[in-house]
Amino acid sequence: MNKQSSISPPEEYWLSGPIPEISPLLQPAAHALLQSVREVKTYLLDFPEEKLWEKPFGRASVGFHLKHLTGVLDRLLTYSKGKLLTTEQLEYLKKEGDGQDAPSSKHLIDNFEEKVTEALNHLKTIPDTMLSEERFVGRQKLPSTVIGLLFHAAEHSQRHVGQLLVTVSTLKD
Image (cartoon, rainbow, N blue to C red; front, side, top):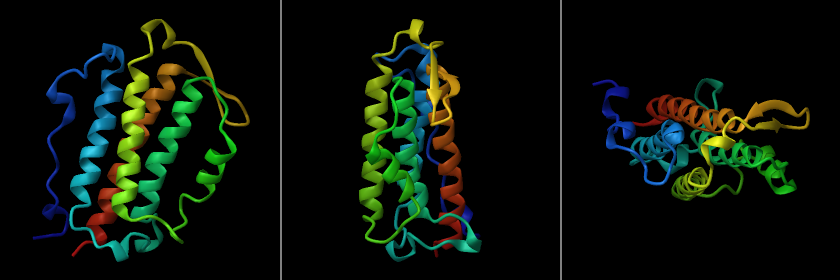
């Protein structure tokens, strides 16, 4: 049996029905975020804590992906609200790859799950009429929209969960 086949994929969240109080237009983002949490928890079952910051083949560590999942979701939610990043958010960004004095994988997973809960609560407050409103990203004020930022938050989370799976599969066993 190869390492990857020892990790079975969890059920797809989008097949479990709509998330109450979230617009049908935002259901795909909500489902993708919930799927990300489910997969992270599944893939990290019995993951050796001492390997959390290892970088196999020079690639990003599991710890980085866990911190980045939380950080990028936080930043994209901030932009979707039309706000600028705080000093704390910028400091967090600088330290996403830093495993020194980093919390445990359980703590990092809990942080991500809390941020997803915050995101879902935010999605419940967004009327469809606001989705096409212009928003700006970063110091360069790159143009986007509310729905563009929320879609990217979900898509980006799924992308990093996929990368996390590959890293976990490489390091586990």
